Amino acid sequence: MAAHPQKDPAPPPPEAGEESERCSVRLPKPDPCCISPCEPPWLKDEQCLRWYETKYFRVPLGKDRGNVGAFVNLLREYIEFRITYEHCLCLVGKQHGPLLYTVTLLPKEKVTLYHSDRYRRISSEQDRYAVQSTFMQFLSVVHEARTTNTMNLLNDRLASVKGSTSVSAGGGLAGLLGLPSGNASVQTSVTDHTVLQVGAVSDQFNQSVAQASQLTHAERSVVVSTYEDKETADITARTIQNDNDCRAVTYFVRKVVELYTIRTTVVDISYHIVAPNFPADWHSLDDVAGLPASVQDEIKQVLKLLPKLGAEVEKPKPISLPTDGTVYDPELAHCCSCEPEREAAMRISLEKQKAEARKACLESQLLEVELERRRLLLAKGDLAPFEPPPVECCE
Image (cartoon, rainbow, N blue to C red; front, side, top):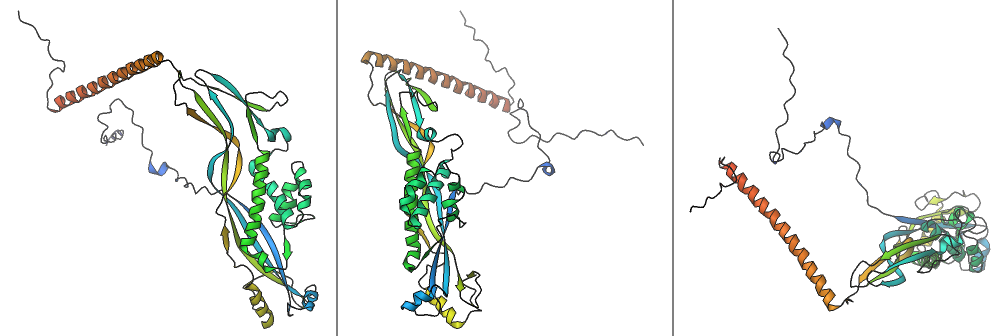
């Protein structure tokens, strides 16, 4: 029995609307088994900068904290609490910053503006960082000086912050991350429980953030001028031109800034006991079962003075950070500078162009109506010529 030749599979029937698209090319649909899995969806773009700060609080063990012997005993036997705070700066958006320069161009006028960046002047190519890196350097130095009460040394540290990479990798930033930080550290010990409240810690960090933001704004300042600085090679030039015939255009050059909210949260509280026959390991607040009853009561009493785990404070006013860019906001002058006759001629020319555009639109609509008429004739079975026969005039 002879084998029948295998025929090609019949093309799929045309879908709705494809009958009118005979001239178009239909792309083949891939087999479902040949399609790769779907891409994972984009997650919410949450951009946050986080710092961690640790404070210690000591109380004497087994003694009355109100007498003099308690302070002597505090040096030998005590309970030390470690409170870790998370400072979070989250990006909420961007907006126009301060006005840098304003220039008004008359009709057909052209001008070249030169942007001189202070950051490119004072730093070499090897010492340039992103805005976030510069801000974190300033913040680590300022906050370390504030928490360690060494504000008098802040000027010396800021003078060398750009020339020493140890400031960004060690120094204050390492202290904020909870790592060893050389001679100074933000891991401070306090004897007053009021400074441990999340509101007080947040206020202190907010002041450091505000100062670091001002330092970043000062370092990233931009000068816009129509005069080229011959002493600086790294200058950005931009030429703008007013192509209007009768109206001036004013350009407002502004800095673009990003806004960050500040939130401080207590993320961890732990303790350890420094006394004979007690391990020096750090324990969570839930790990008190193996301690004597008196020590457990002492810990419970101290916990009433400490901030609650998970306590959070968010500042209502955001902090702004500069970006390495500017924006040009043009504004059209509300008064025309042309003579009345010239303005009238421009209006006549504009009306003529509008009439020509209207004529082209009506001709296109007429063609659409004629096409629809012919389709209706074919649907009724009328196969007569579309063009009407010429009309012969009788004499």
